[in-house]
Length: 87
View 1 (cartoon, rainbow, N blue to C red):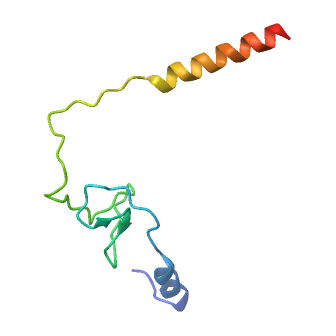
View 2: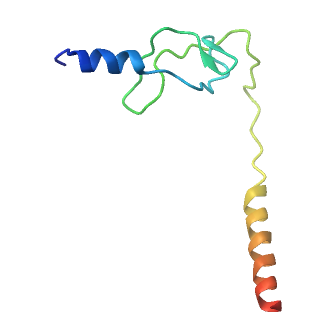
């Protein structure tokens, strides 16, 4: 049990959610949580999440992962190596 003190009360009052990226949550409006209080799980996820039935569903669609960032990094390294060799 947590012993309540003014320090705990002030800390509770200071906690704010700056950005909420749960775009399918019914409590999210313009990347802001509309709830006055939220509960967080042991692993840091929001326990108040509730999917908005009006949000678009992409079930059955497999996301495509192009690996573009890996090829970009590889090209950047190659270009850097070539520049260093040409100096």
